[in-house]
View 1: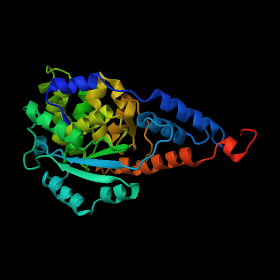
View 2 (view 1 turned 180 degrees about the vertical axis):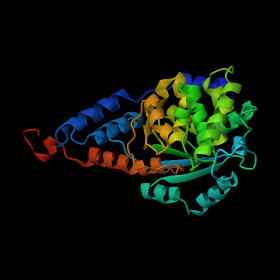
View 3 (view 1 turned 180 degrees about the horizontal axis):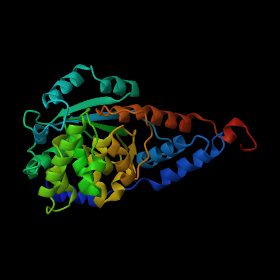
Length: 338
């Protein structure tokens, strides 16, 4: 089955995560030690190549088939004025994605990635999580399965992104419930709200956390109560990719928050993930620390759409190119290592 038939199936998948290929890791590290350069002189490019080797199960990994999946959803809590834009913008931007006019279209093309747009019931926002769980059980399972559905065994890398007006509010709520701390530490301007908007976001999240405080703290329950369809879909895609040993590049605050409930219970869920960048959303730095991920890029981006993750793929391709194409000392006829 592509998706997750029940909460138990989702939790079982999270409890039985496959590991990277130890032999491929060792072979890639050995190759790095033989290339014509001082050891470690290519910095993180070397680490990236070894990481990719472990998950692809080969000493010389490649990216011939990569995909970026962008999930879109709407949220009931936007009625509280937590965003600078109305929920109708979500659908308008999906139309723009489909027409090829957004940043992610250009960046996916530049990175050589197949772009998939998955709009999830945009005409039916999730419930207002200050008064009820955002999704019922079936809705959450459907979103998780929609995410899993974009992950196919032929992929060698997957990047994930989102579109959903107000979803930095959901991301802050998920992060606070998963890792603690004050709500204010997790809240940022999102699409550009003013100080009054920030205060509304804090109040809305605190109300939601209070309402769901006594609920089970399982990853599934946290996602369905405080997440959104696009956020649950990202979690489903990341977990399915792990089942297939496909490396994942996360985008910004929202995509990282999508796996926060999973990582709070099973920290190893991030082992097959790279953080594409560190966004300008304040909570992202804090969240990356909790996830144990170091971003590949830090360019002050805060667009979402999977833009930072797609951009990072160019760095990953460069890492694989040096790993595969550089000569070894023996091939170059260099008798003494640098």
